[in-house]
Amino acid sequence: MRLREPRATALIFSSGKMCITGVKSAHNATLATKKFAYIIERVGFKPQEFMDFKVQNMVGTTDLGFPLRLEGLVYAHSTFASYEPELFPGLIYRLVSPRVVFLIFVSGKIVITGAKNENDLSQAFTKLYPVLVEYRKNQVGSLPGMPSTLPNAAATLSDGASSKGNDSRREMADV
Image 1 (cartoon, one colour):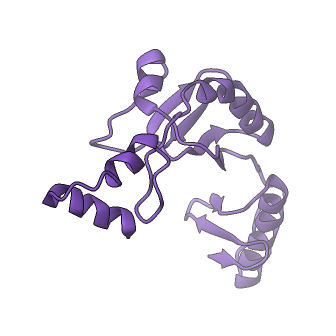
Image 2: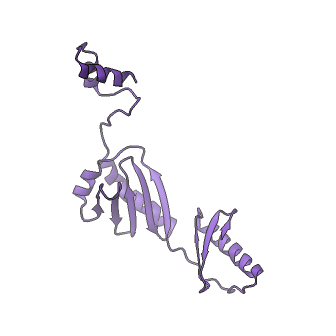
Image 3: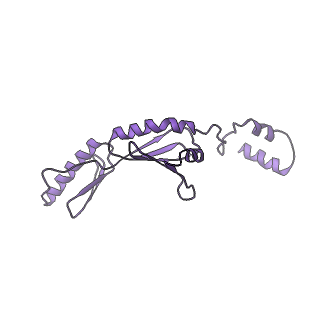
């Protein structure tokens, strides 16, 4: 069952338990719970007066704004991190306290999951951020269609040699 306001989805089980996903805050989760209970009551079922409501999992996302060297991070923090790029493109970092899991991607995008409240999310990110800054990529190669920022690339492309290899590189730089 879905709600438009607050935007939420509920899985309702025959046992009477309900799992609500997709809300942006704990307040919206309680509001959605009350609305779902009202809808169930209108259909003909009698919901319990006292609802045992608790947040099981919170997920947060962020973008660091800079790319990361995941290989270096997993090498230095092998007890907490695992990285298998052939299986999954992100590094999995399990923080002990607060008990959360980070999915860290080369692009600098991060997903934090497993927190019980918003304070755990912010505390975990504050704890790991200095470590992530250590593994910031210093030089990033140019993107296709963007001019290269490497000093040797301009000299290589403008040397005037007439071999086919240099012509194809010159054409790539013009694109």
